Length: 87
Picture 1 (tube, rainbow, N blue to C red):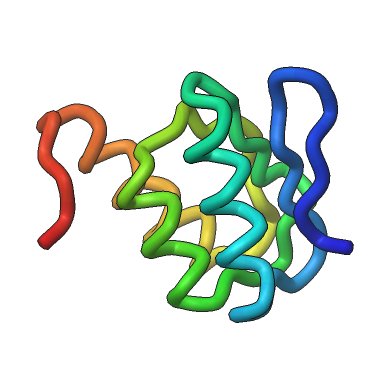
Picture 2 (picture 1 turned 45 degrees about the horizontal axis):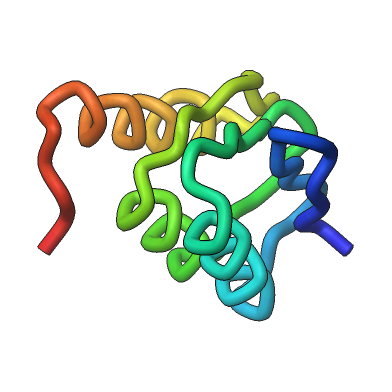
């Protein structure tokens, strides 16, 4: 499974597919304040990115994939910094 909870941290590992969006959203909805670790993530389906944008958890870890590292991670940080929720 690519979405696992370890205490106060949700770890996204490997390639997160569309099927992973619902378990991620459920965890984030049930327990606000969880941190999401992307350090071992190799890919995120757009639905998973949308869940991260919607719930705006603290995100830690730096994925090795350049698209995740250089485009998605700053997007997630930017949404939180502005205090905006996606449309």
